[in-house]
Length: 443
Image (cartoon, rainbow, N blue to C red):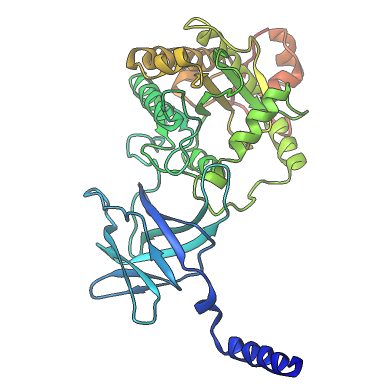
């Protein structure tokens, strides 16, 4: 009898080896999908109950993108394409004769596509992300606008402010007690600030994000540098799930000595985690930190960041309470542009019911934008970058280098330190040329 059962077990094991593993695996359940339209690409995000094995390939005449998922089944809704989407016409699905799920993306033009899977995180389960960009030519780069690029004239140029609306697309940011997503608030305030800046003579704004889509943290830095920004302002709305009474604005700059508080470190860690949520194939693009901080210290970026942040914080205190009376410091990834003074502004606590209500008010958004604008103007009035219209129209003290001038002689003349002159004017080696304009720091 034992020999019989032994023989049967070996026979069953043999037949199991003949059965494909895919036939034994439970079907992958596709629970839904979303389309996000950015200026330079369209992103399809597919939700599933398990890791998604897939193959993706293009088909022409007509243009389509095919996604094959073994043993997949669609149980949720696939998204409808938006009329303004310049790449995607529609998304549909079907099951092939071999039991394989096929998702078809009907296209308006040929695309270059890349796909990757994301592991579950605190907000989403398993996801398959497909990024599509035009195959020929291209769409404008994210956030680009003819009105925001620096003019190429030989004379004084406009100041450029890069305004970064935090979160977006897959990443809603913090959620208010009444359901307000942070990403909507940050974009509304960013647009109001951009309008104020663009009405100011000698200043131009560039919106890093100008729609409901996500940009990776280092992509935001790249865009700020692409537009030669003189200042980078990242706008957010704070959260405290343990204390709904927490309130007020805060302004942060990059730390070189660790966070100023446990809360500041927690907030930086949360914001730096955004790429895991936002549907980005996160690759560590951060330069080696000690080298980055050395470059920023040498160029004066950290000093200028702190000066700009102090001016903004002082003006925010005129609008309402501030959560911290001093500029806070922490290791925010989005502030790591080596050559652009940068700050992160937490406008209010969206998890506070009263502040959430105010953040949804266009009037209060305008007041916040006005305070940011006043701080930015104050900073540039005292520290206008050389070669800008604000420097040429008398903002701050200036000195035109003459024959025989030295940094020591100029510092003595204006009762300032040589190091502050060197830092403010970004003089790496201290060399001067006749006719060069130096900005003189406040005494």
